[in-house]
Image 1 (cartoon, rainbow, N blue to C red):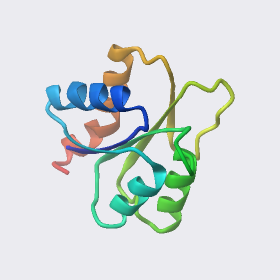
Image 2: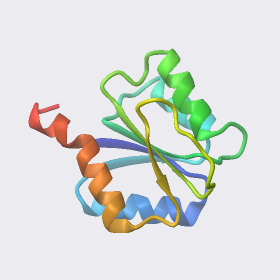
Image 3: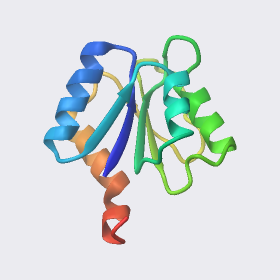
Length: 120
């Protein structure tokens, strides 16, 4: 299962990458919405995990742009944030920082589980 992780905080990005790779996922990480969108234009992923607040554009902007460009067909998305009043785009799961690791891994698993069942 391929995951795109977009997070500007290097420590969080590296920590989540290590965590997810330890669970058997293939993770590609980027530090900005613009970099994430550029990658979504050239590769497909099973799951996109993005922080809301990023330098430049937001994670919400990235997901909305990718959806408009039909880059998220068959791709689940999770948005993480420390901000209390963020609303995700339709169909995107929202998780608040600080992340509960067990809850985070459960959400990741639930997001890709239907794909595993059909061999995607």
